[in-house]
Amino acid sequence: MLRSLTATAPVIAALMIVVLLFEPPALRPSERIPTLRVLTGLTGSHLALTSSEIESALTLGRQGQPPTYPLTQVGGRSGRRPAGVVYTPFLRVAWASYASAAAGRPLRANEVPGWMRAAVVYVAMRRPVDTGASAPLFLSAVPANTPTCCRQPQPTLARPLWVTDDVTALTRFGAPVPFDDLAVIAAYPPTILHPETDIVAFRRVHEGSGEKSLEMRGRLDPDVAADWR
Image 1 (cartoon, rainbow, N blue to C red):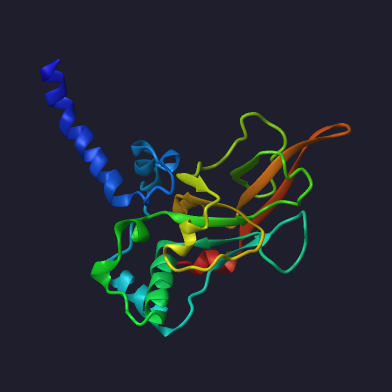
Image 2 (cartoon, one colour):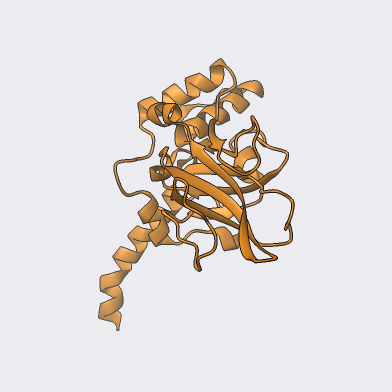
């Protein structure tokens, strides 16, 4: 038993270090993400910000209010407002720099915490139509135009690393609440930033002939996808 623990302890310790370095601070204990999900979110060619990218993000924030990347609304309620917005690591640092500069204390590179520059994107989605507001809210990343009704469990291209409805997930890095009907905020691997992927916040309700999804569906514009940082 002791020999087994001696062999496995260094591996477990290394995984926990990864969690501490790259996991955003949990808003509630139930939202703390498992180690394997952290490792999944950090795979691929997308890495945390480099030193030069951090400096560029800090400079952008000092120059004025940073942008957000909109998710164009697809189907459902039409209108000019996007279905949601995306904050990349670069934008999180830029927003933090902007907020710090506005408070009269410019943010320095060595003050940027690991969770802020980690290789995950935050997605903030508006809620679907109010009809059926008592039904549970779900979040899914699906190929463009794929329906969300009504397979169980709901297929998704990527599972969120964490999900919350607490706006502190945005305000803690200086971003304002983007919508008065904000429903959910989630962290995803950067691979979801693709114009052929729909991010959908939805509720399933029973109506007359059966079950259906009430959706707020967003898609990244190809021009934004080509230039995001």
